[in-house]
Image (cartoon, rainbow over the protein chains, first blue to last red):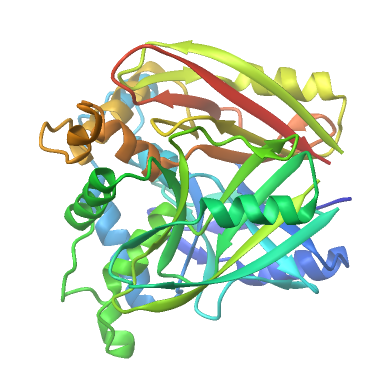
Length: 137
Length: 137
Length: 137
């Protein structure tokens, strides 16, 4: 069985890290499915889905380390393609990836107490992002 | 059909890299399922699942490069949250991710001969980790 | 239901980034499945699957940043194991991972217009890679 829910989420871009755990729980509840896999996918090539302990210190630390590893840099060749300024956004998104799959049992996600699901928007401007919650059971 | 197996694995923390391929094969055999997808997920925000050629040189190299990219650093803001010392553990786990999905056919995983499935425990102390093997077919 | 397609792809190795989106679409069409999840997996421990906007500038930028983050380096311990020279290939593959799962609806993948699916071959020589497209519905 396949259940699907699409959610539109507004972000501030610029490495905005948004806790989307409650959307995942809502999709699970709406589906009425008890056991299976939840796939969470963000459409687009400048955003990612991962898990993190969602507290302000760590949110700060993640932005900082990504900025050090893959800096904003005017010399990216991508900027020549469309006169863009978001080469670093694409590179960070490709590294972390656009999706995550999480198992669930008895209608409860297997994520830990301090393990939230997050959308990271690496783009250089506010965006409206389409997140797909697809359940296989 | 959904088949599920939970396994508890003791680690030494501190970037302990544990080969869990035999647990995956055991889960597959126990399920009696011949064709499908195996999702492997670690509960918690300071550990990851990935694949690697499991030999001691490469295990050493992976620990070393992660320590260079995301160093232990007393200045992480996360340390202020709970007086923790594991900011780097969280950041590494978010980057690599908590799960991996692997297809299988005729009861055999599609991983290559030199491609083992590993749990990496980035936390700064020994832990008991819950790994979930969930099969969809 | 499980549908499976295996594709063999020749690469140049050395961080060759190959757009495999059309293979994914073909697998989806061949399966006749309308709604579900497509898992794309590369066999082996020196290659990865991810998504990126596939344009030459960004392809250049991704190779460059990975080379800076995880450089070719004769001092990797892995090189002692088999007299190999591809320690960096393994490390990059473990970081990005061997698989990606993408939802689809009405027979259409949910990837964005500028979000292509790519195989990256990190090995240090041309390879023939087995990619598995497995559909669960």
